[in-house]
Length: 227
Image 1 (cartoon, rainbow, N blue to C red):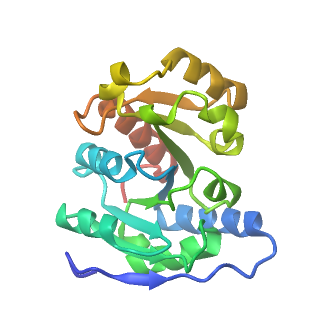
Image 2 (cartoon, helix red, strand yellow):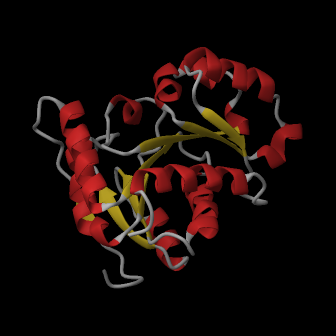
Image 3 (cartoon, rainbow, N blue to C red):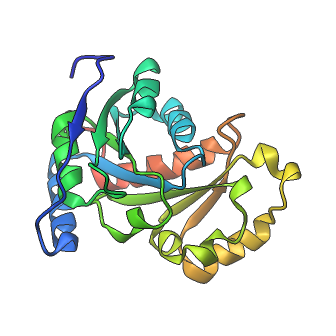
């Protein structure tokens, strides 16, 4: 893919009745080509793009990385990635607030996943719809920011039930907002006892060594070593 050139693709919703089965098939395809695919979900404004850039800073010397930016419209985040030197494409969902497995497959085909070790999907900003559709990703990462409040796992249970790892972003603003970290972790555990939780700040970089190490370990386990 030509560097720093903005590419926009319009994906079509899968006509398959069983998206879960297609998602499992996609994971098999990704395993065969040795590409680790991670789905990043959050509400708008939580800091997905800046957090992804922090993660890439930590992993870029070890993995060939590409980012797929999914939005109903617009290309702001893709331009941010391209300006940072990250291979990226824009996915327009045609009004849909989610990606399913075949929509993911269309994007992976366009970004050239066989030539990448790690593909990050920045899913549509929404705490409801993206959690309802299996994208075929190997892992699901959820970001919640401090201003959103510590009660969100109770209000949007499926998002946190689905998460393999949760980043609590904007901890640099903890003293400004009424956010109880212990209570948030307790609320997550009510929905998901297995998710790992990392407090981070995309502004300062705090906490991203641990978050990147989690992704590094998960990717290496899936890939079975470098390509």
